[in-house]
Length: 612
Image 1 (cartoon, rainbow, N blue to C red):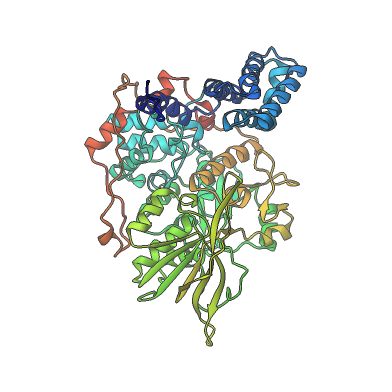
Image 2: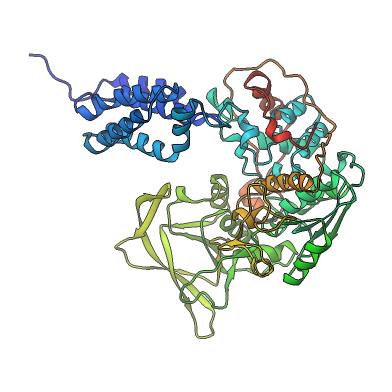
């Protein structure tokens, strides 16, 4: 009698993994602009391959959904067939025996809801919606639409100054983005299909390390237009708007409440990540354009806002989100409890708190929390603990920032929800009391925590830093009349404040707290739209062009990463933690670029609207 094996063939897993790896790479490198129905169809076909064929909803329903969705994609379906597609998806989701069937049905139902306009366009207009089509992923996903292949090729040809000029064509903060950008440009890099996305930020860092921004001449300013623009806020968005508006020939006055320009780049990001002298390189270059007057330590209230709206041809409000949110819990107002944003702000003016020998607890799991924890380590604390109510992998901070904090000695106290702060008789905090959490159902795209059946835990604390978000100080502008949605300003698609012709709003105060590069992108758009509002259509010349593309090197190759100083030494000071890329490293990394702007779908013109 033959013996039966209860284990699956040993070779199947290895063969499947080998086959699926290229598929996974393609999904992770999906270019922006792809028709969502085409993507849904490809995933549905994958589900069709996986079905075991035992239950009718999955075995018969998925192939029928594939056929109907193919007709939709081909712009040949009718409204009745859309109804049929929805019915089949409901049947598969609710009646299938396993995850393959019900997830396939749920995928179709979600698509019909989220991309309703796209389905309607395919069925009624017989075409994709406007804007659907292949684009250069790195340019498209950069909020400022920087010509990434262009400056990479300039670095490759040994012209870092030209690369800085190319970046500055769309982003006047090349140094800032070289050191602190969250590099969304890398998320869909097509090189990821072969091996891994290009280290775009690292290449930009090499450029500014070898050609400081304030040594690279800015474009020549156009003739005076006779128009005056007021910019409120000297952060990344406000200074970007001022830069481009001044290049167009407008007179710009920037009003900043703090002592120095830079916004959260100076008052929210520690020096070990972004040295102040490097920020000044970008600011010096911006001011070298001419036509920009900076007024520091100037608060703009309701009265001043009225005066600016009357005295200037246009006003751009870019006040950011520079106030820290508070916690509503017992003991939150005790001595020793501080806003993380406020502490980082004071440090921006070189006012360092004395934390020597103290136990510090940071509440939160974002980048501000990591910045605060790593800053506290450098201020001589006895111990630094981050209390976070979710898992480590759920933190909104960049993974590399979390890893760096752990390497420098920060303790991660995860799945602990802050409940109250213990206070002594003198009114000073002594501990943070937390309720342990259990990770639970997925809400809003990530697992949510719930209280676990465990006793509360106590973390001794001399200082508690609250890093649970940022607020917008919008009251004076609301009193002036700018419309709000909660604390954010409401604008139209052109960033014009509702109810006003000459007032524009952008950056964190309009979107809520995002990233430096998102604020830069808003400032660039605002400058263009203000120029159009004033009756102009200026074009600028950045003075550099991308060199001819070299032949692609498609040999799989590892990604070069930026080296850092060793944690035991770097945590003792505020010197920059990142080291410079070598010429050999950057040459190899530049050589991995596939020049999608030439060999792929062509250049993405949307990012170049300010230029000839």
